[in-house]
Amino acid sequence: MKILAKGFNYSQDGPGNRLVYHLQGCNFACRWCSNADMIPLDNPASRETGADEVYDEIMRSRMMFFDGGGVTFTGGECTLYSDELLPLFRRLREEGISVCIETNASSPRLRELSEYVDFLIADLKIVDEDRHRRMTGCSNRETLSNIAYFLDSGREIHIRIPLINGVNTDPGEFIDFLKRHDTSHADFEFLPYHEYGREKWGAEYEMKDAFITPETERRFKEEFEKNGLKTIKT
Ligand code: SF4
Image (cartoon, rainbow, N blue to C red; front, side):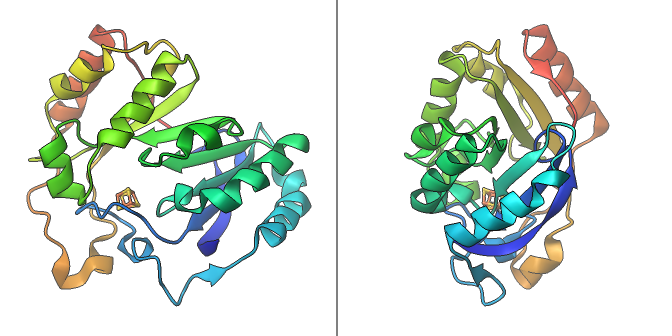
């Protein structure tokens, strides 16, 4: 797998202190992506690393996994490396290492992979298919199908929704979809638009007037909670 960056992070990429791997490459190209350098599969700054080497590094680091921590794979889109991650996750499960992934939930392999994932973080960006295609370059059919599957199978899932002015600021769009499923084991986090990654895009950055107001975020929180959808902030 190609690793662009790695390091420890506390509580934001799953519970406790975690060793976080950022894997190179993403099948989406969200126009607001703050890690544009992680989108192409080829990036000379990333390093091809075998699963055995990653496993050894994780095992050497296990003393650091305090407060319920462990290892997290994110991206880019970590599920692009499902062939390598699946056997790695099996080995980590045998050793009792907590595994978290953060994913755009678009992979047909995600359900299989998630059997060995202790903490699942899935992004839900846009429910409308055409708008999703326009803003991310990809269909959301697999994402919606996977999220619906996880909700209805009763597994715990943490769903992150980026809030972007002019793109997805109607809470009803999400609530209509979510309320058709069992949300009792899910929680939801809103990520207000930011421009920390603007420089990585350079002249290609297309987002304009995309910041949301505090009222919009408050409205999302109120509407979600009114509909029995638990919101959290990590
Ligand atoms: S899914 Fe995430 S990593 Fe991929 S392009 Fe979108 S924001 Fe960037």
